Image (tube, rainbow over all chains, first blue to last red; front, side, top):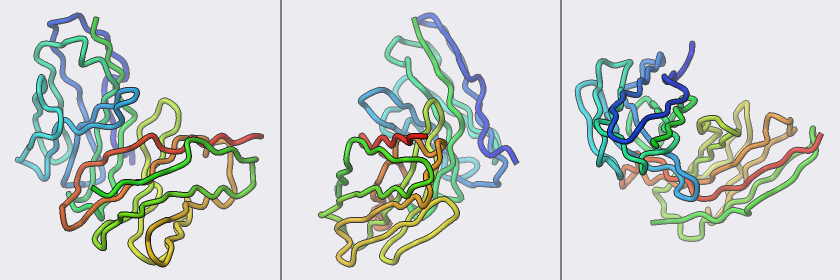
Length: 114
Length: 112
């Protein structure tokens, strides 16, 4: 039981390059999330998926797209990376969206855009 | 939005209890109190949550004041692995607070 896994762990991109961050969970959770964490800015929600087949914007969706590939997998794509997207990206999952459900996080992807 | 206030840092000795306070004087009746922690270079980790009654799990205990304006996370026997930033947050079931939003948290240092 791996929980939430993310790949890659580290990535360096040049401005304008694209990439996809992968996330998978093996807990049979319905809801999945992508957050970014920046020093002094705390955790911010980029996109979320309440259940398989649905995705919605969070607080900071500009410059990102997501795909809920199936119940297990939720990917985050940067189409044209910018230095402002340098951050640590966390994927999380939960049984559902209700605030009584805890969220389980992956180990993170540390992305640097030069 | 109801906010929380935590001390910036706390120190503890290994194998001693740690009591982490959190003030939330503007808490509403539908706010759940959640605690998460984040170890260095790792993702956040759920610790515990509660509404009104004290809660215990394998990681910690949560003591909630009778008026719910404050709470305390208790780590019963600190280990070096408990050194982390601890976040106290409120999540309102009435407003469907699905996203997590952390403040500065309390940085816990555990001395061997």
